[in-house]
Amino acid sequence: MQNFDLTGKVIVITGAAKGIGEQCAYDLADMGATIVATDIDKAGVEATAAKILESNGKAMAIKHDVTSEADWEKVVATCKQQFSRLDVLVNNAGIMMNIPFALCSYEDFKKQQTINVDSVFIGCKAAYELMAESGKTTAGSSIINLSSIFGQISGPMHSAYCASKGAVRMMSKAMAVELGRMGTKIRVNSVHPGPVNTELGLSAAKDAEKLGLVDDADERNKMVGTLFPMGRWGEAQDVAGVIAFLAADASQFVTGTELVVDGAYSIV
Ligand code: NAD
Image (cartoon, rainbow, N blue to C red; front, side):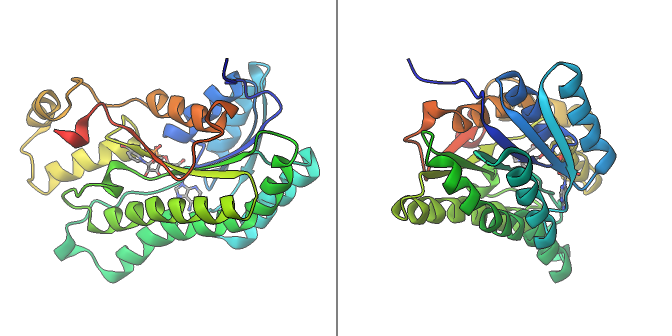
């Protein structure tokens, strides 16, 4: 029987104030993990941690801008001081700028890369030594990077976002090979959701309407029937389930791979 229990694992989740990160914090806490919930939105992430504590789970909140190396040092130092370990890092925080290529400024492009790509690089750099140390006495540690199906296929208004998520996908694979060969027992995988019912996910549909790419909400809703083979959007919980698998020892030989969570959206 494979081990899906997360008891004893310390898990950092970035972008945990809302959306996929928030849901992930609740679900992984329910599976026994201690959650270090971080977000640039201080009040939001404190509310996430408070909700876990109320239901007798284990959690703490840290205000954290994922583009700041100093903030990353603080997050990892807190894990070391409070728990002497860090088993799982979920690089979830991100933004999606829905701007057609012709209208996308270089500044917009750089902002998209800094928040979605640089953050993953500096986060993994800050965390990997403590994660390697923690993995010595367990089945190993796990880095889980949120990419997107737009790290695999193209999308309208998404040249900057696709660039960022493609980078996260390939950086995850390269790190998986290097950290594996270094003997760290740190696995690195990327997760690729299709459209998910969160503020970020819905923004693409709203911006497409503003730009006249779809006429109105009715037309958008009709598109669900044709574009989404399972007839619905993804929910944050759908993604959290895959992240839970990658966090658990059940996936201890899964590294350098990409898990798509899109109800077959990207293959029709
Ligand atoms: P969301 O907008 O609902 O939540 C994102 C969270 O990240 C927010 O709490 C926000 O405050 C935080 N954040 C943003 N910038 C930050 C920064 N600089 N430092 C720290 N925190 C910051 O988004 P979501 O839909 O939950 O998306 C989560 C991840 O999943 C993102 O990386 C996104 O690209 C990816 N994703 C989402 C979808 C989707 O349709 N929702 C699809 C594929 C991939």
